[in-house]
Length: 442
Image 1 (cartoon, one colour):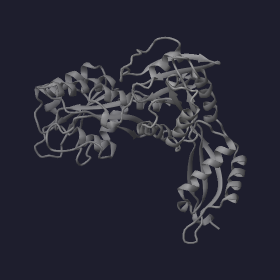
Image 2 (tube, one colour):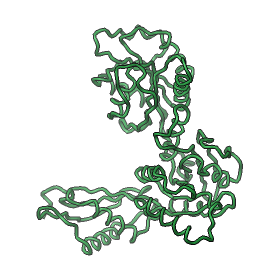
Image 3 (cartoon, one colour):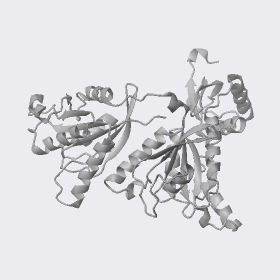
Image 4 (spheres, one colour):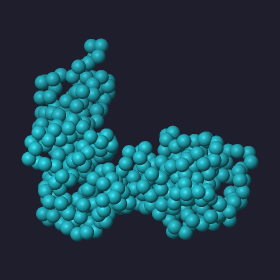
C-alpha cells in the first residue's frame, strides 16, 4: 500500500535503453531496432529485485528539437526526470562522450536525484574504458551488456541501494487511502472537491486538466482518510506523448498506493472498454473497488426504464468484479457523496477480516460435498484443508492433491461460496492451491 519508487532510463538514441529495459524487466515490451530514434514513446513496468519493487520507465532518445515532435520528446524526458526517484543514464561505451552525453548527464545531476550511469555494449571489442566517461561527472558507473545480461545484476543492486526505502509510519498504518481513478473528464476533480469540501483541485470542463496527484486528508467518523485525485487515463492508443504519459504512471502509482479505488464512470458513456480494463487492474492488484456512476444529475431518474437499462449494462460490463458495489453520484447535487465514505470504511473492514480456520474448513467441506470437483482421466482433485494467510486483500491457501486438475470454474465456485458465507463485499479475495507431497496422498 506504499507508493513505489520510479526509475527512469534516459540517454541518447541508440544507446541501448530499450534493450536495457527489456533485460531488466525480462520482457519484450519496448521496440528494439538498430535505427536511431525507434522508441518514440515511453514504456513502464513494475520490477522486483531482492525484495524491493520499483516502476521502471523507458523514454525516447534525447535529440535536438528539430521540430515540435522532437521538442515534445525532450519534454517527455524532462518530465521523466521530475517524476523519477532515480535516473538511470544509458551511454554507448563504444563511442566517446559527446556534447549531447554531457548535456544529458548535466540535466540528470541538476535534478538532485540519485544518478547511475550504465555503460552499455561492453561486450563489443571496440568498447572504451570507463575512465573515458568520468568527465560526465556521474560517480556511480556500472558496465553492462544489455544484449547478453552482463553486469545487469550489479546495476540492479545499485538501483535498489539508491532508491528511497519505503517506510511504514504509525500515521500510514492508521490512514485509509482512497484513489479516484477513471478516464479523463468523468468528474474526478469535482468529486475530489466535494469530498474534501474545499477547492484544492482545478475543475474545468476540459479533458486532462489534472496532470499530477492531488491529495487531501480528512477525518470521517474518527478515521483519518487520504483522498488521492488522479489524472484521467486514456486507452493506450489515445495517449499523447509527453506529460500525459506520466499521468498514466502516476495513476498506476496511486492504484498501487491506495487501499480502495473509486472507479468513476460517466453515466452518459457507460460502455467504455477501458473502464473495464481499469477495473481489471484494480482487481488484479487486490485493491478495494467501488464503481461510481458520475453526473447522475444529467440523467432523468424518473425514467425507470432508462435507470434499469443503465444498471443492467453496468452489471454486464463489470460481471468479472461482481463484488464491487455500484453507487450513483452527482457532485452538483451532492447525491450519495457521503455514502462513498461510509462504503469505503465498510470495505476496509471486510479487507481486514480474519476468519477462523475451523469456520473456513467447515465452509470448504460443505462446498465440496454440495459440488465435488470434476477430474481428468479418473484423477480427481482432493481439497483437504484451507487456511487464511493474509489480509488486504484476504488470501486463502487450499491444500490438497491433484490440484492441477482443478478447473477455473470450480475456483470461481469456491469464491462465490466464500462470499456467500463470509461476505467480503467490495474487495477481491485471493486463493492459492498447494499440492501436498505424494507420500500423504491416499
